Amino acid sequence: MNPSYYQEFFTGIMAAIAIIVGGIRISSPDNRHQLEGSSIVLPLLLCIALTFWIGFRPVSSAFGDMVNYALEYSKMDARHISMDWSSEWIWQWLMNGCKAAGFSIHTFFTIVAAGYVLSAFWAVKRLMPSDPMLGMLFVLTSLMFFTFATNGLRNGLACHLVLLAFSFLMDDKWIPGALFALLAVGIHRSAMLPIIAILVGIFLLKDVRYAIAFWVASIFLSLVFGDAATNFFASLGFDDRMTQYTQTIKDFSEFSKEGFRWDFLLYSTMPVVMAWYVCTRKGITDNWYNALCVTYCLCNAFWIMVIRSAFSNRFAYLSWFMCPIIIAYPLVNLPVREDQDRFAGWVLIAYAAFSVFMWFVFW
Image 1 (cartoon, rainbow, N blue to C red):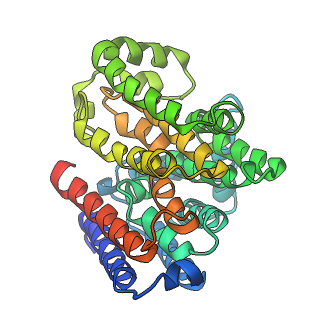
Image 2: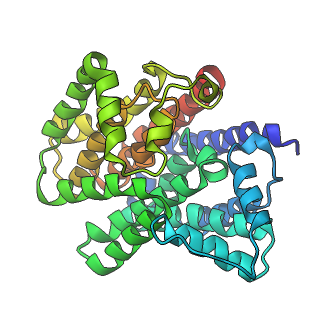
């Protein structure tokens, strides 16, 4: 397959599966799927197949930074491997270990893809154990899933490990939660932002209304103080390429348009609307969901502050990786509607359709 068509093929296939599954839910005469859940087998097989398909994709500039990772890997000398312990040492260890073991570049990419896809599957299974199929379909039909599987490799892998860390931290399993959080930070330092945010959501800010209010306020603050906010966050230096990304360089526009991204903001609004509907409109209280919603609002508010950055989608993903979870979690675990099956089916189809619309129209 021509590398240029990989994204379109993946988007089309995932949308078709979402429509089929959503249609089955909509036509369900009762809440059978809500009550009985789904098997773990089909989503697991789908994730395994995707891992190999993504891992063995051709090395091409159509996948963005993939060519840079491939070039770096090809230049590594297994006899003289060095580590820079001041940088993301887990990622270095992974690359160096694969190179020393004599793995091909496609084996390396498959290992990364396995970490990216299967960590998300494991997190979904822990967060939505009764219906992993529905949860994974929301993950796979997300706007940025394929992009960060093939382009922003470190960022994508780190964020899905953070999601897995969330599932342990909220379950009071602090040792595995801290371990996965450490792995995530060792792969990409930007993972510190959602990790700090989830701790705020667990221990400090438990009312989702205040988090949503902060998110709304961040839009107005960005519109008024956008450039100043961008410069401030760039000065913090928690991300290894923060300063570079926030500089206004025209060559970057090929990767991500500059300016206030209203299209990205529209996409970011969907989880906030779901959080408001569940926690405020319906008045449903769930400690795990509250913490996840607070985390999303805080992280997305940070991105809104640097929305004018040329690589703003990199920062958006620090919250966007949670979008499918924020939307799917209440559909599986909480009594949102009496016709839960039908509602979940319509939401899944709408979510997949919106991702397709964003990709083909606005990207």
